[in-house]
Amino acid sequence: MSTIPVSQPTTSHHAPIGVMGRLRIWKMIFATAFSERLVYRGDFALGTLMRFLPIITQIFLWWAIFDSIAQSGVISQEDAPGGASESVTIGGYGFREMVAYYLLTMIARAFSSMPGLASGIALQIREGEIKRYMIQPIDLIGFLLLNRVAHKCAYYAVAIAPFALVFYLCRDYFVDGFPPTHLFLCFLASLIMGFLIGFFLEAAIGMIGFWFLEVSSLLFLYMLFSFFLSGHMFPLPLLPDWIEPFVNFLPLKYLAYFPAAVFLGKIPEDELPMEMAIQAAWLVFFIVVCRFAYSRGVARYSGYGG
Image (cartoon, rainbow, N blue to C red; front, side, top):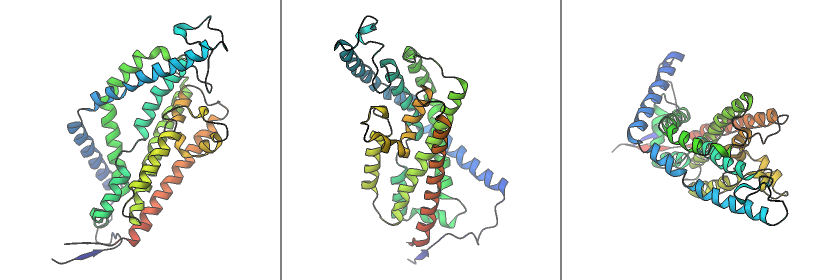
């Protein structure tokens, strides 16, 4: 069996692809990925509904916490429905706001989570499958991004009903109701940027596979820190004062905490433009890091196949 060395990508064997031709390619990739996910992921709706079940545990847990504070005698319970005083706040969050926060973080994490992305890239590098992107006029990062966009579109197309049902049943937990239009638009923008930050951050981790064949340990550390420091478990203002400034400097808060805080009006409006700009800056940073890691990794990559 002969061996064919593969080094870095070249486009010299391909005719230049115009803008319209490239758009047709991306459209075909997206349509194919979207239809595939709709066919074999009919469990999206049921799976999404089941993911909301732990929120029941969170409601009882936080009700017990707020109720114990109210019963401690520190705050009067004269207007305490269900035993948990509406005057009790923890980290600036009341009981109802805390429940609403958890519901919103589930939306944010559904946008920003990228299961299998980094490990999949590292696996393709290790097993040599990545060389197909070097000999075909398809950009690896763009291809994977379109697949993730198709995945999210298929997910929400099927899971929108369970989301709507749960949020309708829990509507009383949203004390201030629907946010003003400008805050809602900022909320949507933060979700989209959170999705892109999550994608390029995990893709950059996967690119480490060009230098180290196994990235599972690094990925485990990232997932561990992300779970705790993104605000997925609790609002970040609950952190100790000595660590909160450090956590706020990290990009992880834009994956879960920030979109939820924007929706609930927890970000002061005079600080919101700067926070949105910082999130956009982190997005640009990870795009550059991901692209740079890919170009440098491909330059040193060698694959052999029959």
